[in-house]
Length: 148
Image (cartoon, rainbow, N blue to C red; front, side):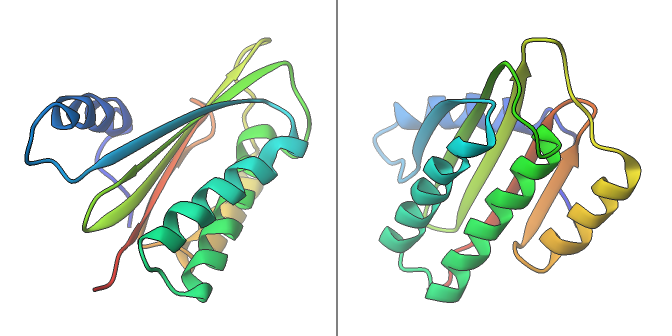
């Protein structure tokens, strides 16, 4: 389970930008930058739920995505508030909803310990179809396939 190398986020976002300019593209990209504070996780939960609902995902799938957002932020921020921000990018097309989060902590990357990382992987594996996390780099990305 997981994505190709972590630079996938950069490659995907570059490709998404190129696709936005193509007339045949059906992909939407939404980007948020929020303060690196746990109280702002709710905004991301609302955003992912809204996007998923518009794409026809079930209530259970939407709840899974909300929980995946919670778990990702817990891993990225180690359940603490920090100076700086978190960049969140949603990319949705006809096949999947992709979410990428990158921490931009003022004092440098904050990394969860190995136990927290393992717990994250166990929980998120049941919530999404693909995921990748590199807490030392401050990156989490996951996706949920859209069922037709």
